Each structure stands twice: as C-alpha cells, then as structure tokens.
Length: 83
Image (cartoon, rainbow, N blue to C red; front, side, top):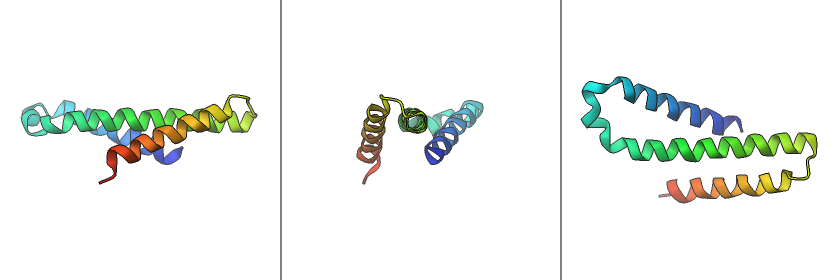
C-alpha cells in the first residue's frame, strides 16, 4: 500500500509541475497521456490496497473481493508497463 501511494503521489506531483511549465508545454505534450494513465492505474492500486488492508484488519466479509481487485489492478499495471 505504501509503495503504491508513493508512486501515485509522485506521479500526481509530476502532473502539477507540468501545469506550471506552460512555456515548455509543447515539449511535454507527448508525456501527458502516459502520465495520466500512470496516475489512474496507481491511484486505483492505492485505493484497492487500502480497502484490502482495512478489510483484512477488521475481518470484513468483502475483504476477499478487495484482494481480487488488488490483484487485478496489479496485473493491469504489469500488463501496461512490462516491456
């Protein structure tokens, strides 16, 4: 959970920096779509891992569904970023 949140926050902050670099917008234009995809994927992984962690700690019935969601989002990240 911590690593996924760290990556998501780092990507979001990179996006914020891109917003302030208006004079170099053309140079960074090709990076916007992959950056948005990374933000989305790692935010989903962070949310799924937080839900999975909370469900496991409180022994909720839905924790197994959150484990499956986490595995699915991790598989999506591997699919997108594996060379």
